[in-house]
Amino acid sequence: MRLTSSLLAVALLSSVGSSMLYGYNLAVVNHPAQYIKEFFNLTTVERYGTSMSTEGLTVLYSVTVSIFALGGLVGSFTVRMLVTKFGRKGTLVKSTALVFAGSGLMGFSRAFGVPEMIIVGRFLTGVHSGIALSVVPMYLGEIAPKNLRGFLGLVPSIFICIGVFFAQILGLQEILGEEQHWPLFLSLTAVPAFIQLMLLPWFPESPRYLLIEKHNIHATVAALKTYRGKANNQEEVEEMQEEQHFHSSVQTVSVCELLRDRTVRWQVLSVAVVNMGMQLSGIDAIWFYTNSIFENAGIHASQVQYTTVGTGAIEVIAGLVGCFTIERIGRKPLLIGGFGFMGICCSGITFSLILQARVPFMHYISVACVVGIIAGFCIGPAGVPFLVTGELFTQSHRPAAYIVGGALNWLSNFTVGFLFPFLQMSAGAFCYLVFFGVCIGVAVYVYFIIPETKNKTFMEISQMFASTSEQEVGNEKMTPKCKHSLMDLLSCIYKSRGTACRLQGGGSSL
Image (tube, rainbow, N blue to C red; front, side):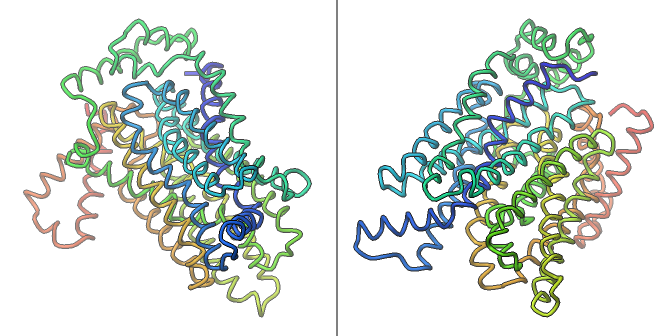
């Protein structure tokens, strides 16, 4: 199935007004950090006649940075309700109101002398990102043919990198990096949201949503014609009808029902691991505090902003590499390679920071490791977790799965954004070893537990896990010794998953 102009347009529009904003908001507070702190201190003096302590400013700025993630956590909890009521496209269009409100608050915060407006604005844009980061991959995964699902699923991750890159470019002193421009710098998120609001409503809703949840076959066929062009869609309609029949007696499940469902326990655990690992890998610490990390690495303050922009360009290139290779090499290699390479670079930062006082060239090693972490992240871990979250579940379970994955993702994001400055002050260079352990642990889990989903339908993936679950139940009854230790349990699971994959490869009906 070829890539049509309608598919590409929807992927670009949904990503510009959603994923790009997420990336922009991750990095936008990096450059004007000192100006924002000065604004906080100035308003405190005006209100109370005394300035804030250094520790107080650090805490308040950490709240400003991490409140975005808290908003994302709140937004992720609303996904199931919104996509069920308004659809995938409808949710994206209606949620842009949050961006306009947040952008206005941040843009006028200095004019009104109210620093709380920045915090509330960051929270509202975080709520939007919490919704969009789950809905965009859900929408693209449902409108894409199976041979393009990986490619379209990673388009949002490219725009996350582009958003970060734009924030780094606009934050240069020569553009919007001067003290008087930081409110405008923070409020520019309204521009891509406006573009999405104007253009995305012209495209159809997800065909799977229209058929399986709305039971509208005519709208489904019309949507498929828009997204597939002149291709024969009969086989795809039959596959969706099969899924509809399979879940005809099942309503969209809630989060509690999802967590209690033993048939999807390994899918849920896998979603939790990859989404938490995505944020606890240390990438948010790199994005939130890039300038201070480079200054600690010995780069002169006047050159830090240009070094940061260089890393942004590498992010975009790495994201493109992942997008154009995922349908060839699969999801697992990108996850394992990305997390593994990030872990190696995290350990490299620790050793280079320890030795740089005695070995001058270690300054360059630490910068190279930061670049390596960013590149490793953008190749796979930046987008594949969202893609896999959608692929591991069928229509009835998918919204709840995105709530679980999104909530854990944002909670981890908040934890890193808030605690990293204090972790860095207390542990110094050794703080990156925490991220090293997380990255290697996730890579090992993906290698042993998560199957490859490339070129498989949602029903095939679901039935693969169903076969594994049935074999695990049989193993529990026949071989109680599998419960003796964690290694024994993993061995049993790995063997049973291999059996399921071999059955599928041999043409067995799953």
